[in-house]
Length: 82
Image (cartoon, rainbow, N blue to C red; front, top):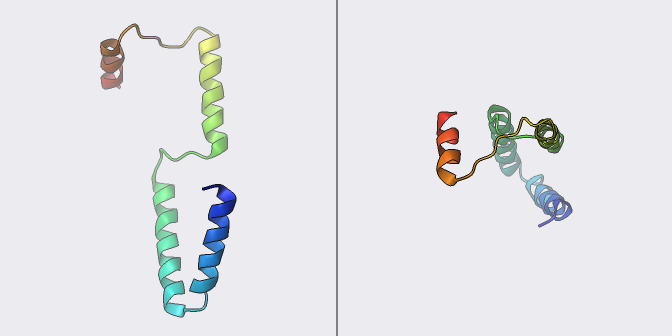
C-alpha cells in the first residue's frame, strides 16, 4: 500500500470517527500513545536521518575506515562485542 493510499484510508476512517465523540476520544488517545512510542524509540529514524547515516557510512568506507569480515563467525563476534 502506498503512502497516498494509506493517507486516503486514514482520512476516510477519520471522517467516520469524527461523527462519534466516543470514537473520536479513543482515536485521539491512541494517536497520543503512538506519538509517545515514536518519541521514546531511539531506533526510529526519519528518511533524512537514515540517508544521512548511509552517506556518512559511505564516506567512512571511501576513507578506508570500513569494517570487513571474511566469515560469519568473525562478524558475529564483532556484533556480540558491541
